[in-house]
Length: 475
Image 1 (spheres, helix red, strand yellow):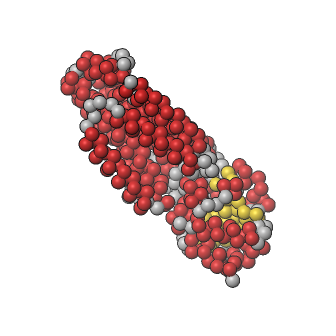
Image 2 (tube, helix red, strand yellow):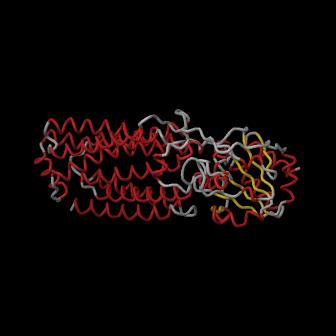
């Protein structure tokens, strides 16, 4: 009866996970999706606790430590820190799967493969071939290790602990291929040695080390501008690692949840690559940002404007488009932007928010920020929706976005982002760009939009600038 109850709870948890991910596809239902998924995880934990032989004090300690970390993260991490927090949590998922794989490998070393398989059959009622169990363990260690160290590097780049630029060196791709091939060979030796021989032991240790090294080597050549893609890819890897861990211990809900995360993360990765008109291979292996190429030199000067100048133009505008980027996140300007948008609407302007899929430093970054400020979901428009009407827009307000509105992506064939679909802010009658200074964006590319006749620069902190515009409307 206990086994039946456990499986029923796992099925219920899996159903809740599926519906939870489905609801995450819309900002209107995302909160409900999180709640359903959380309930599913609670059921999965309760079902797991029904197994006999668990160390209750270790379970309790794990729950308390994990809950404390989660509570501190929820209370202290600002919205600007969400990308690196997501990267870090992806890494936690990877290391958890790696530890499961290592623990099961130790069991085989201690008890022998035959006795291990008998115990596994008694627990689950499923007969598992020895080679399958060892292969699952090897792949879990491999994918979990890559996810852990790769996520740590992504966290370092996003948080500023590491340089955001791509890191390249001679023979890099060959070394990466050699390390990855050696890791696969280690997995093969584990299987061939039935996990019991001395060769299998050294192969398992080598596999773990190589997986951790490969995670670093895979991520350091990727520039900061490609971090949204990397985060979604590592999220997919964490799901794959969890699914493989589920195959090791024959845990149905872990397999289902891991497959859901792995598949959804990979779909998001493909969507992000398509938004940049690049392949995943190009993102991972091109070393974007390591060459220092910034496109054609731009002639002319940036034309600064004052808040008062911008106010008079905005007051007369009938159509305004906000184009947010990471600068809005850094300045925590989303609430001030919402207030300015409401004032513009009161003055008769139609207001839109143009959201590029790779704006910010993680998938959906701008959507999360604007949802926090209660910006109506119907005002958020994707690139394909807003570009056709951009020539009719009176004012485009670019808040810290650089690469996603860079005309060089359409005009400069030598530019690294050439071919990437952009929001055509340059087609608006007037463009105001809010920047802290004259530096390039996160990718290091110069933006010719800043030098165009219809563009004016509003220098300074984005929140302070938007708040000053709000104050002008209140006079």
